[in-house]
Amino acid sequence: MESVLQSLLEVARNPAPAVTAWKQGTNGKVIGWLPIYVPEELIHAAGALPVSLWGGSTEIARADAHLQGFACSVVRSVLEYGLKGTYNMVDGFIFPSTCDHIQNTSDIWAAVFPGRPKFDLVYPANRQSKASAAYLERLFTGLQEWLAALTGSAASEGRLRESIGIYNHYRALSAELAALRSSRPECMSDLEFSLITKSALFLEKTEYNRRLAELLPWLARRTVRPRPKVRLVATGIMAEPQGILQVIDELGGAVVADDLALGARILRAPADETLPPLSALVDRHLRLGPCSTLYDCRKERGSHLLGLAARHNADGVLFLSMKFCEAEDFDYPVLKAELEAAGLPLLLLEVEQQMSALGQVRTRLQAFLEILAQGAGR
Ligand code: SF4
Image (cartoon, rainbow, N blue to C red):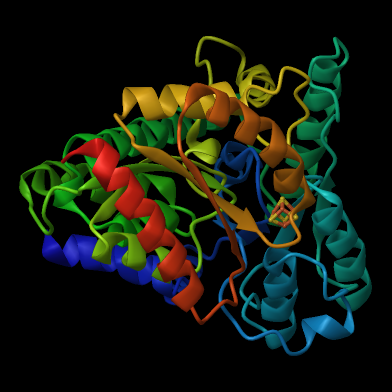
């Protein structure tokens, strides 16, 4: 089982060999999608491999010639990887209308890579509108047609049903992994959890499901660290740079639940398999949330975090604020007020993927965890 675990960690650290091997083995197309929400099932049903492009810790050299310095590190590193040729094996790109930064990058991408197929997935701003479902159905049909033209294979209703089942199984297994992290955090480090979750973004999901299903019983019996003194809920776009997770681990803490975009958010809401397949994907999108990038006048993120902390017996919340991410910045004051009113400690840490020095982060985390440990009495 150790080799299965290591294979997943390796895919997350260096996805290119796994993606290239899939492409060579199947002669299929690779479709890259940017954060946060894309109905991957449509790509899977078209016989292509969906891979998720969330940037990385690469040094930004060429992208700054095209993007302003105050663009977030996700879009800057995605463009950098594109310019460096890291995505040369990717046949088509999907840009969801997540935020201004991704929408602007989509336009820049078209100018920089005019010959590379791209689809703009422009979501309805207001998901509470009655027109949203019909609009989404047309949008997803357009995506299906684009995929069919690119792959040369139109997904039948049966194939889409099958893909929806595979993705629901993926979400169920991921929920088991998340439950294990909370009930026995000593069985894997926070970094291992994060990398296992991330590896799913580059593997064909039947294959990922097989490996994760094998791994879960073994992980449940494994012990790699003492029981944590402090239990945290992490929220934000992603827990990167991943050195932050190692610092938490070293300080005797553990993330026992999360509300990260590159984490629990994309794994929420199984598709309803009793609905016609396209309607099931539309319905799923309408049920996603709470998320800073999805308009929701009810502002439920604060209560969602309070619920997570209560269910997972967490001592505090860590808000990993991606530098220059306006969507997340707008949510922060609202949820800070709600968490303070409920007496749940909160630490805001500003992060970006290119951060290398973690000294300040360590100092602030240490102080936060010491205060929480006194209260937790573990
Ligand atoms: S981190 Fe924020 S600003 Fe950057 S791509 Fe994601 S949602 Fe957009």
